[in-house]
Structure formats: structure tokens, C-alpha cells
Image 1 (cartoon, rainbow, N blue to C red):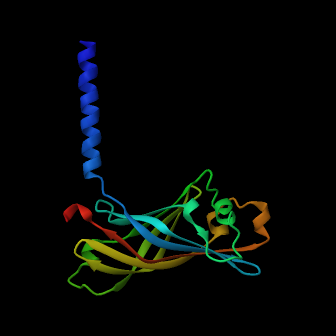
Image 2 (cartoon, rainbow, N blue to C red; image 1 turned 45 degrees about the horizontal axis):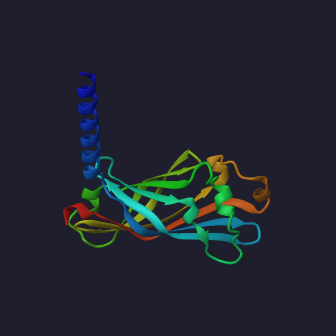
Image 3 (tube, one colour; image 1 turned 90 degrees about the vertical axis):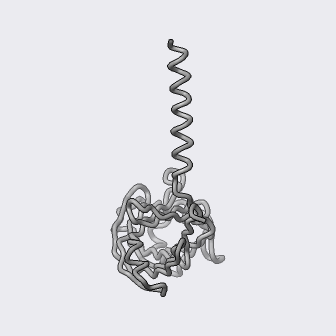
Length: 188
């Protein structure tokens, strides 16, 4: 009897896992983000084209996920390890951003680009900051293209910054997402 129950539980577990994988909203890859850390003498710029984006229809938010290890220096004056150290990538390996994107408002009979003030939730070092910023959306039937730029202050987030960087940085961080997209490949 015990053997039978274990077999049934295993089958149910496998079936549930397969169902969840089939109904999981896929990410769209190859999206770009730039992070600029303002310094006393210059700006330290980092960029990546490996940001993942998906749209959650339940929360009506775009979810942007970027492994911090993929943020690379955009110029020679940006130290390779600075962004890893500032965001404590060893403990918090991902930069996670949610952007409110009410699809019915974005697709309200207009296929032109439109800019909406959207709530953005950014998670850095496990600290979530909510801000309202303009986001430009370009809707299509099964795709959302969006761009935004916003700034945060290290002090506002109360992030732990390694001492070797505190005298070099002003605390201002600028995040730029340009023409990122999510495509619903499930309906193709």
C-alpha cells in the first residue's frame, strides 16, 4: 500500500510540475539596461543586453530580471568589480524591477507610442523602492516594447556600500531601459 501511495504521489508531482511549466509565462531575452553610478570625478557606467522581461497578466506588470554579473563596464574609467560590490552581487545576484503596465490602457485603440506615468518597483539588496516614472510604451498585438529612465539615491535605499566606494560616489544612480520588449510567444 505504501509503495502504491508513493507511486501515485510521484506521478502527481511530475504532472503538476509539467502543468506549471506549460502555463508559466516565458521571459523574452536580449533586452538592454544601463546603470550609471555618479562619482565625484566622473560617472561609472555599466551596461548589459541580457536583461529578461516578461508580462504577468495577473499583476499587470512587466517583470525585468538582470543578473548583476551581466552588467559590464561601458567605458575604461568604470572599475569591473564596482557594480558587483555596490549591489552585493554575491548575496543578491539579481536586479529585479517591476513596471506597472495596464495592457488595456496601453492598447486602448492606439498603436502609437505613448508615455504613461507608471509605478516602478526596484529590488536592490533585498530592499524594494517604489517610484512613479514616465514609461514609453509601444504596443503591438503580442508584444510590448517599452523604455524608461529613472534615478535613485543610495541613501534613500539605505544600501550597504563598501567603504572604499563611499568617498568616490555621490550616491546618485541612473537606470536606463531602452526599447526593451516582451513578446508573447505562447499565442504564435
